[in-house]
Image 1 (cartoon, rainbow, N blue to C red):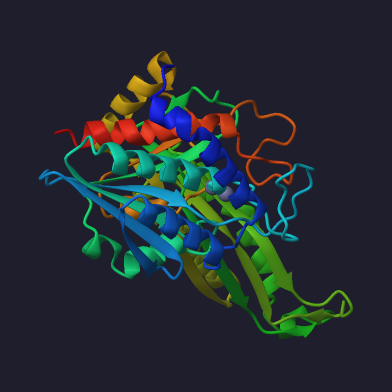
Image 2 (cartoon, rainbow, N blue to C red):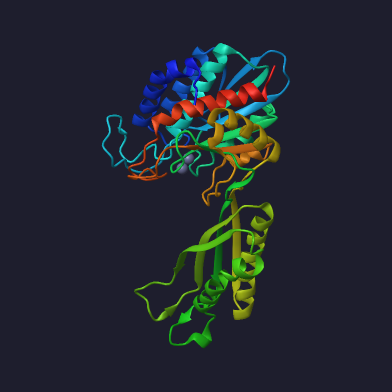
Length: 389
Ligand SMILES: [Zn+2]
Ligand SMILES: [Zn+2]
C-alpha cells in the first residue's frame, strides 16, 4: 500500500489523539469533552462547525468548488459502560467507562481525513463530517435525524465505517445488501385471574398460557419466515408470581425479548406474528394478552449505488484486499437511521487479529492504531472520487 505523505506525517498526531480519546471515554449524550475536541479540530482546519444537534453531536461542513453533490461521513463518539481490564499507558481513567468498540478510532480517522481534505481541497462539492453521539443503544442517530440533520445538511449519500477485528488492517469489506440486523424489543403481558394454587378452576391461569406461548415462539422463525431469510426471536425475560408464595396462581405473566431481521418484510412479519401468537394463546386459554413491539433500530442495508462508490475507493486504497463478501452481523448500528434518508453504505475496516480479547465490547479490547492510516486514506479517496472535479 502506498500512502499519501500528508497522511503519514499526520499519523503521530492522530495516534496521540486516538489514545487521548481512549483515556477519556464518555457515555452516549455525555460526550462533552469529546465533542469539544472534535469541534475545535474541525474549526482549526478551517471547517464550518455546527454543534448541539442531538445534544452533543457535531457536524463539520466543507464546501469546495461549485460541485452540487453532497455526502455525509459518519463517525460515532460514545463509549460503553464497562470496566477496562487490560493495562495500557492510555487506559481509561474513568471507572466503568471504556472505548470498547473503537469509536475513539472512528473519530480519529474521520478527523484525519477532514484535516487533509481541508488542506488539499482536491474535490468539488460538499462533505458533511457527522460526529454522532450515543450509538450504543441510546439513540443518537435518531435524535440527530429528528432534530433536522438532513434538512439542514442534505446528503446525496451517507457512509459509515466500523472497525472489524479478524480482518487485517490492510483489508476492508464493502458488501451490498444487509450488514447489520434490526434490533427491536417486544413485550407480552398475559392477564389471567389469580387464584389459590390448589383451586385453579376458580381462576384463569396465565402461567400455563405463557408456557404454551414460549414453546410455540420459535415456530415463527421455523414455520412463518422464509427459510432463506435470517431472523431471530428470543424471549429474554419472564416475570410472574413469587417464589415465596407457591400456593398462589398470579394474575399476570410478563414476557419480554428481542427480535432481529435483515429486511423490512421480515421485520414486519416478526412484529405481526409475535402479536398473533400472544393473542391466539390468550384466546385459547380464555385470558387477555397485551402486546407491544418497540421498533428500536432498522437493519443496515447497503444501497447498490453507494456501495459501488465505496467499493471503488476501497479498491484504490486496499487494492486486492477489498472484500466484496463478508457475513453480516446480528448486532445493530443506528447508522441505519441515516441510511433511511439517503443511499447509504457501511463498510468494515480491518482491525487486525481477533486475539487476546480484541473483540468488540470485550474488557480487553483496544482499537488498533495501525489501522488509522488505512481508514483515513479510505475516507479521503472516497471524497475525492465521489466529489470529483
Ligand atoms: Zn459497540
Ligand atoms: Zn461500535
